[in-house]
Image 1 (tube, rainbow, N blue to C red):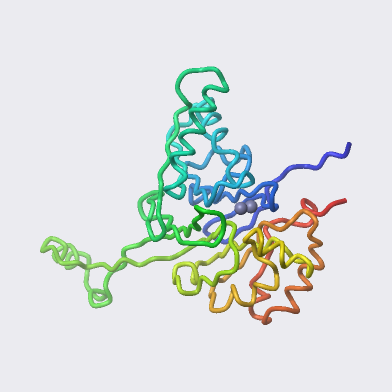
Image 2: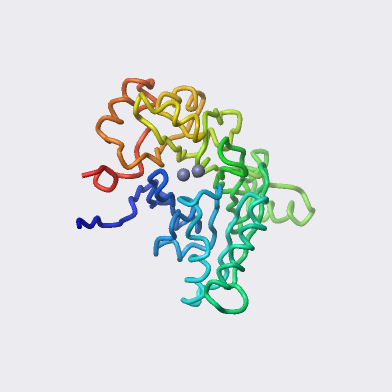
Length: 289
Ligand SMILES: [Zn+2]
Ligand SMILES: [Zn+2]
């Protein structure tokens, strides 16, 4: 037997990093430690225990299997306050799952847990000044994507020249002196069929767009359609109008030949789009030996 080291791939984007493991049908988890959340939980790698919020896109096993383990293991280690955010229709079955697991383990109440159901367009507050906004995707039902957004209050332009005491004075009078400004950091649809997201400005302008691209083989277009996944030939349409600084492809199959995949991208996309694309998984973790 040959063993393969299990390791999360890591990408650095300045103010935050993303670390994950994402192979179609096997496991999908991306951690954003500085943003205190996980995008899907996969099988719950050890590193996922330290983030307090899990944004679950849909219930397929490769994305969600680690949910009961996340709560049980955090409880075991005495880490309080974990929350799993999921499409609102999933909350009841997830509650049932926790209760069923308590029976499997042969103890009374389920491990402490907290599920928050969201609908498309809703914001979930991760912490003050940081929200996750749910958006619609095309996959299993239910399924939602999430965008993590840095929300700041910026002094209105008309007050820019004022001194500190003058601003305090205005504040005392109850004048609104700031505007709410949103900086979308990471957008993640999870699994999705063909869909263009450029009509959602917070997705189109997110610094990082984590996009699934499950199939690269020319013969696999029908498999992509059947599973509501993306094929590399869908990318020109899906990426039209997207202004993301970084496009990170995730959820490739284990068989993907990375060198070949890069070549296909180079030939099928405009140069300025292809240049923004990277893969989360490096070749040493995913190709069959
Ligand atoms: Zn998947
Ligand atoms: Zn799926």
